[in-house]
Length: 270
Image (cartoon, rainbow, N blue to C red):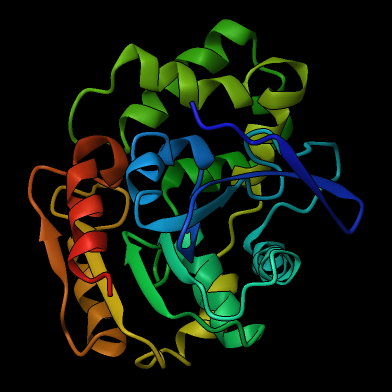
């Protein structure tokens, strides 16, 4: 497990973060419904080359969770920009996944945050996105939040497994389930789903163009959450069509093929 001993106060909310290694700065941004623990097998390897910063998004992982909290994509890019300022990073490299990809793109276009290099995989970036389950939770959030723990756990387990192409280990399932269990975690899980809204990517999608830094786009070939065709669409506007397709990997590449992420990072490191 990664250690997140540090806390950053972001507009009255406690954000958990940690760092490893030495060298040029590299910021890792996780997606939903995960946490920085999604990097637990990757960050120690990257720390051989970079100073690696990782944190839990607002309302996720070990960061503060509370009723009435805004945990949508609308606020996560401001957090990323604030953390980079707090860490005194001017042009860090960034490695981002899923909502983390949307967060990094929003920070680039809306907060003028700049990167030395971006490595982005299976991001929530191109419309349409959002599953029937997401729409259902948005309509009945309170009912889901009040499910008996055994029913919630069963639903959560199935939802997490659907992100991966390979069968998740029990260790991985426990790591990803833990933040979303109990009196605080369970309602927080449905809160972040209920606040998923395509409008937060729509407002930047029209601005997509090649970034002012080298950009590497990866995509899990078997991604059932965000189909490969969305990756090709994004590549067409972001990387001149260049995209590395990862075989035998679903949306959760960190579990299906972590070596592909590490290889991409070291292949393009300077």
